[in-house]
Length: 345
Length: 194
Image (cartoon, rainbow over all chains, first blue to last red):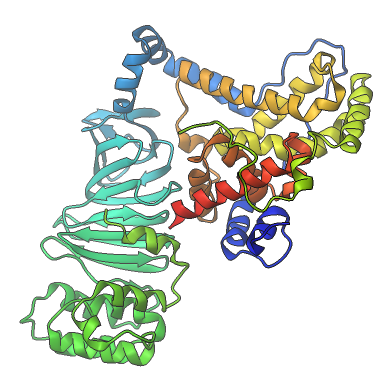
């Protein structure tokens, strides 16, 4: 029927499976219809439409939002179009009494652009990130809503801990921290910022990009990455990496070139590296002195040999194409998110 | 972004037979017509059969327009509306197109009401969101950026698991149109995924 084999698969599932179509079927199949026919009233009998859960929720919300709705209607569509994005995000108090710009949130509230949400040691909150996800705010946390637009949802996390779950396409949700920007690549993660401005991200699903001043880290599910004011993002490592990794990487990333433990730290990282730790080595091979990068290259080439055509010199010179090809050969995940991420944010 | 469906005749590789496929195959239409007549007489089992045939299509049409948290409720609304208004369906063989129109109108009505009140915090509707759903939601978001004709067809194919012939049979589109929508929609989707 079709001249292209993959079209037959797309058309009726026959023939050779198109990997991308098959992957989308697998992923999207979770959303498939699984409902059942509701109970039917006898035909001819006037019936009041069955009240759906969605309608009930709307009706329950009406009292709380009536004043805002009336204002919006009266003000007119143009006003709505102009102002609505500035209304900010819905905030729900989960425990205690969080505060928005110092005013306690009892039940629910709204975090407008430029406003601060603060939790004390006994309070927690949940923020609806527009329509693309949600953020749980842990105790002792301060966040500010910086931007709320269709393609840019941006928070500033000054201190404390948030858990983000985002289901929008990559690069719709950003969190500024004092030392780096966390860029959501379609994921779930926990981001913690300490009083000194340092931070750490733990990714539980998908990917997160960490960026500051041109220095980037790319963190997949199961990995963590620290960041510090000044240097910015450190080197990511898997949570199950050798025990020496966190301390050794902290010295390599933030200890400075003259740190007395630098050489021993690099030894520890390289000695314990498994193929899976190529994630860490791939970042390290772009950092540090040339001698250090040579050592990292040799170890990475041993645990995860570069694909044909990738030269040692190209990698050591930071050639983007060579680094990308080597990354793609590591089999860390499908390349989709990676390709998207490679576009500059 | 245009919602206009693509022209049907400029797609290379379409069988000539497909291009002449009429809307709603005669056998399918006559089965629908019989079920609609029985349902119209109060036969709930016949209406349940129609539900089995069309629930995935209706679900897909709504999923292409409305947030997932509200879709299941709206699917029920659509079928209850259809059940109550069966008498208004002049051509019993055209049930597919008729209920599709109800679904599209219901989605528009849903958005209008949401705008008049205030949209509920999404997190209330998304408490069931797990990490496993995040990728699905992301992919669906991308599909929903496509023109309506493409996104409806792709949601039926990729989410509901309907085949191209099945989509054509249920929607009343010609097989050639469905193939065009799948092909072009998937091409656009691949570009967005790159």
